[in-house]
Amino acid sequence: MKNFQAAIALLRPSHWVKNVFVLAGAFFAGHAFQLPVLRNVLLAFASFCLASSAVYALNDILDRHADARHPRKRFRPVASGKITVSAAIALSLACAVGALQLAGIVGRALFGLILVYLVVNTAYSRWLKHIVLVDVFCIASGFILRLLAGTLGVGIPPSQWFMLCTFLLSLFLGFSKRYAEGMEDGRDASEQRVVLEEYSPELLRLLLAVTLACTLMAYGLYTMSPSTLAVHGTGKLIYTLPIAAFVMFRYLYLVMQRGFGQNLAGELLRDRGILIGILAYLTVTGSLLF
Image (cartoon, rainbow, N blue to C red; front, top):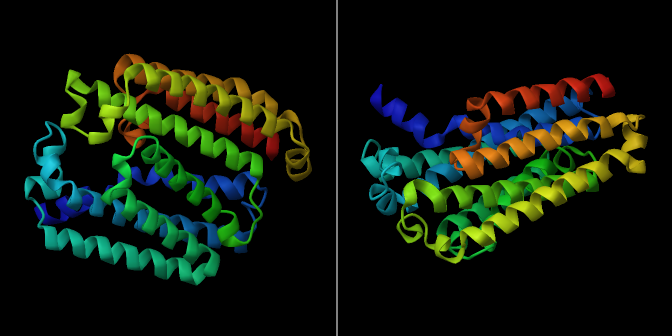
């Protein structure tokens, strides 16, 4: 039972909430409720869940020595010795192979996207996460690939405006993560992640402000674009902008004032204001579109 719990902790299923971007692509492209498309989108979602777990396991294997010296990360399965390196490697490979097999059922496009995701994140875990700005752009690429998996990967043309919104939002979330890591417990940044030495609090605050503003502006333009009107038959999505703004401002407040930013999945479920905002957004958007 302890080994099973350690394996589950290694694969981090709670982080699969990030893969909702796979579903979002089809939803905002207007194809979410066509049964053949829905089947393929759900397979794409499952494939990304396995692929992301493979990446989390690989990252824990490569970071096990640094994690062992960290006050919080030392409890991770590999760093704490609850699961052996060989077992972690086996789980990572099994998840990667499973992800590619599921993607292959859908088609070559999704298979290629999953393969790119695995390659990029392997490079990220090995060395790209140590290069300032490149590290956050790698994080952003993961969200873009998720969006493409739910559109291009299943034969749906992706919305360019929605891709831009996703890219900017993922940059905002990436810089939030770096800010939270840099501020954690007042520890020296170099003790946690080498690249944090290159990010000053002032730079990160500026990057957060820029990406937040650009995300909201891009989303507002997306709701009013001719392509959005053609797909959804309504220009009323602009009324969801205040809700989106509240959610982002609330998250920025939590990052700056409450130390949020490191665990997106857990934080979304932990804050009542964020949850209410997301539910309100989904309710209003659903009522406008359907």
